[in-house]
Image (cartoon, rainbow, N blue to C red):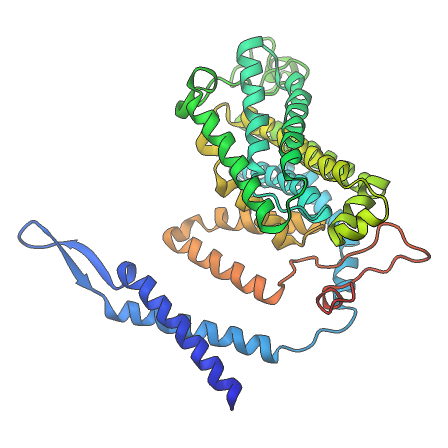
Length: 424
């Protein structure tokens, strides 16, 4: 009976802290009184319900950890093998989605947003999932790419396609600039420094008003063109509608942006998969598993870390350039720590090192809240509960297998159940 008593004590302690947290928010309500002033109306029933649900949820979580069934030995491997069918299906759906009859433009625009975060997740996956370096300031490279394009376009008259590689190169340089001070740092210390780097970039673009516009941001950023053809609501010469003789429609620009970010995301995925099979990619994986063993094998840890930061930052710069071109306006409010946290959550939720997992997690993290807009204030509550349930059931992410890039004989994928026992 010792274990049930401990579980009840644990759940009661969690409920007590929930009472302290919920009391100022759910326990009272501020409303107008008859005298024209404000008064506090107690809501004990709502507070009791919230605390009771917290107690029950904690108790169920402890019971799940103690009595959940042991998964079969090959479950994680089977889940990883299913990616052979899921990935092509998702690719085909992504290619044909804008042409689905009757699909509103809002869903295509949501697809653009999801693809942007997929690209950011794949870029951060190089740093976190492959090299095992925790980066909490990834939004800094996103901001560098966006502001590089905006400043080059406004000061030198360059277009999106000319600035795209430049933005990626500048972001990669800043990635290397971040990598040098953190070569000897690991774990929490590395996370703190990268977090500080992201905040430094945000504060610089906020306070350097003469260059970046400060809190007001930069406007009139040029949109991408198709071989010089602009996407406008007119049919004059030099526009897409005028050149092809079609009726101008907002869906034309949204669809064009959709396929741009889809191509950039697929490029990110292709480069990542190619690098994983190269000596550099195997060095990243060796660094992730054991840095000391990596050094003993003669791998240059300094160059390995710098390349991970630089290549991951380059793709963040590409995504930032596209973000600026898509919105036509950028400001420091678009590059807060919450962006870094969201991208990192996508990588962790999908399964660190898994390309397909990042796609699935981005659809959940970005798509689900957008589809629950009608629920208003309850949508984030439902979304948060769903995330907690997912991480309890799948603590290592959606795709938790690890398959060696190179092996003697047939490469065997290692499931999460083996990694958790220290045999992977």
